[in-house]
Image 1 (cartoon, helix red, strand yellow):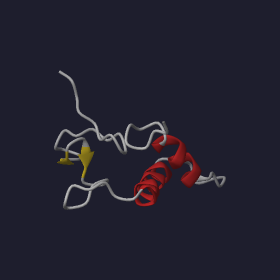
Image 2 (cartoon, helix red, strand yellow):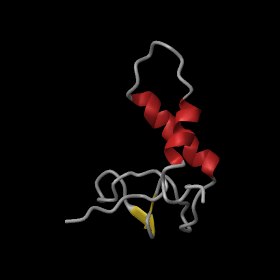
Image 3 (cartoon, one colour):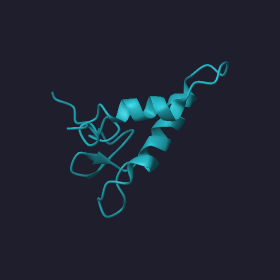
Length: 79
């Protein structure tokens, strides 16, 4: 069985953690009309997610890490 994932943030669209709001986009990345939110908004959310399971010591640049992560996602990949 093939799993669907958000083409913006990569979260699994299984209805448990995230639901598909628009074709290939979750509710974290798409607004109530199904439009993809600005990259900066999605990037901030991904940065917060990365912080949630990172050690508190040091001061990694989570926004930069989130940017690198998003650039690998279909919605944000550079052509």
